[in-house]
Image (tube, rainbow, N blue to C red; front, side, top):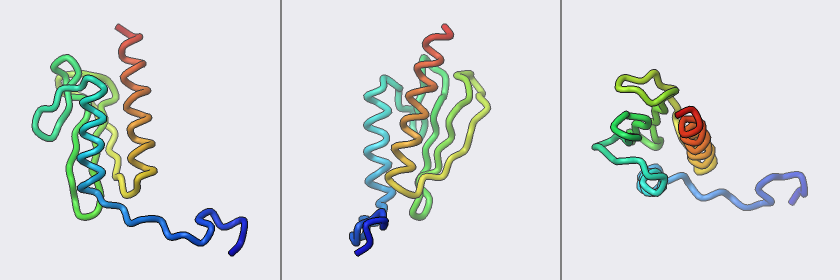
Length: 100
């Protein structure tokens, strides 16, 4: 075992996209976003869209809350990417609140 090995000899658990999607949806509801089908809205404006595909989560994140927003598309294939996407969602929500 090499001390520079980031896994220290342990294999990471496989990414379960379905379980991660359930958890991500719960966290988005905790952020006071309203769930509408596969999307989440902030004051009636769609800000996040989620889709489960194969072994990944397809996420579209609005650049600004609008009725038809421009979105950034992300493909989440690991728990680390899900955490990073959630952090980005939190940053954008905070920025949008300050802008109003």
